[in-house]
Amino acid sequence: MTVATEKQQQTAQLSPVPLQQTVEFRNVSKFYGDVLGVNRVNLVIPPGITSLVGPNGSGKTTLMNLVTGLIRPTCGDVRVLGLTPGDPEQFFRLVGYCTQFDSFGKSVTGRQFVEYGLKLQGYSAPHVKALAHEAIARVNLLEAADRKIAGYSKGMRQRIRLAQSIAHRPSVLVLDEPLNGLDPMARAETLDLFQQLGSEGLHVIISSHILHEVDQISDQVILLSYGYVVAEGKIKGVRDEVKEHPMQILIRCDKPSLLAARAFGCEAVVEAKLVEPDGHRGAGVLIRTRDADGFFLSLNQIVLGDNIQLESVAPADDDVLAVYQYLIGSEGGGE
Amino acid sequence: MAVYKRNYKPYEGVLTADWRRFLVPARYALETLFQSRLLVGFMVAAWIVPIFGVTVIYLHYNLSAITLLRLNPDQLLPIDGDFFGAFLSFQGALAFILTAYAGPGLISPDLSNNALPLYLCRPINRTEYILGKMAVLFIPLSFITWIPGLLLFAIQAGLQGQGWGWDHIRYAWAIFAGSWVWITLLALLAVALSAWVRWKLAASALLFGVFFISSALGAMVNEVLVTRAGNVLSLGYVIGIIWANMLQLPTNKTLFGEMFDIRRGDEIPQYMAWMVLGLVCAACIGLLNRRLRAKEVVS
Image (tube, rainbow over all chains, first blue to last red; front, side, top):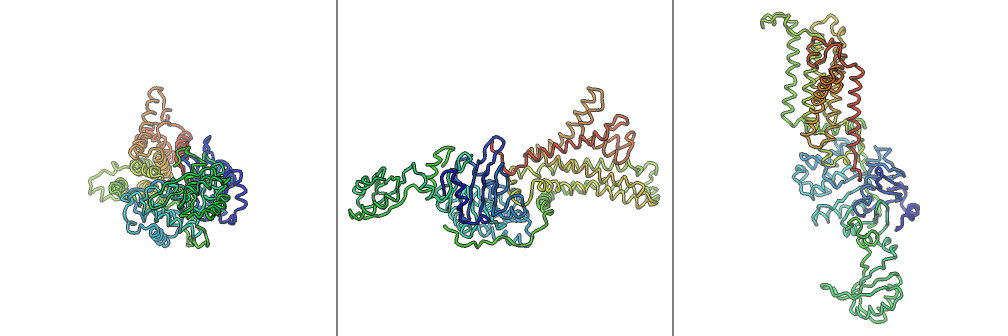
């Protein structure tokens, strides 16, 4: 986990996962003529769910295209489980790609679309039907599988795209805005599927603008801005590294005023603000501190000393959204 | 969520041969193409001239049939290079119409649907993809050009006997090679225009434009500059020169020469005709290379 790009090489070296099981970027740069795609990227992506987060034009799609072998780096080296696109037969079998756009003809049925992809992979006819069925079942679309995609809802199209990307059983799954257009129920099911795939040992690389959902499922995030990796790692770890923005901790208790007064006495506390009761939750104090660990030690003493009954203690800004805002801000229309 | 155990099983089944991969897009596109009744009807109608040709050949060797039809044997079309040249020209024109109908829809839907990344993130490269799309045209175009052409040649050789087939093997070669030159040119133009213009109708119109406007332009240059050099601009004329050479035909006072407006003495040189074809093919490949990218280039 790190915030500054200079530290990325170190992270790569310290990765506990064998490199043969990672997606690895070694000093990768990609330029489109004079336009920068990504620059000097060093990353090691372990199995599990990794989210790419950044404003439009930050380099998310370029990174995904590099992983899927659709484009080659201008310099540097991309290895997916130890392989490069120079070995297409092996490489492309490892990677599944779900684009954010519709990519099928109007007269094609969902099942045909998935089967077509499998045949392009070179899978033999008897396996194609079974694998397509398995993938369509996994995205809960069996009932509509033999209907033409032209009649699908946006959510169903998203799911059939997902089915084609997992049908050939890739080891690395790259998903470009996979939650777009899904209703809440389908979104929950899809997130559940990602978690299943991630827990099975797949590399699930997601680009998404729906940050709170990314936050729920991601094992790690990669924050991008203007083609550079701004931060990468587990969200909590990234948040801890953002020293210039004090950590916010929301404490709900029975004596918020007393707690606020006592908290001011702590050296690490920058601000303490009373919070009104929220629905069935009681009043509280929002603490901003530069040393969360130090504050938690002091909090124990305050609570015990003044007999304060705590209802909840929770970090208020160690999610992707907060980290995104701190590191990238609103530049490029980040959400 | 942590990854405790890697229990995801990749596919370990049988794979098809690499070289067959390009046939997958071809097969699917052919299926779609032959869903059109208009196309199937056209393909059947395209065999009218070959059947007429077979009839003419048959009449040459069946005096009783000539007598029955009260025909003068001297009025029958002679079975020579001109006959095969005219056949090739007529079937070539039909091949052009078929290409204008079927070709523009080959690549444009994939571009409109942003489907290229889904092709190219699999073990199929751009060349194989283009080859697959061109193969869609190879099959129906072969079916109406060199296949019936060689059939006519075989029937003529069989009926004439006495080593005619071997003595005139250049006709068979010209039919086969000439057809493939034409098919390749048409298929390449069709996929290039399909990649360039996403609207099917406009791509069809453009294909007609490439031939007819270039011919008109060539004729205009000829008129204004009082020359025949403008013919290099006419793809129809260029292909006529190549076929005439393959068939070793005299171009004056022949049916073939009339069809292509080729007059003896002012034909463009062979090398120039091939050069024009090479340039057109190179332009098509350049266009395809530019348009067929896995992802949009950031600008």
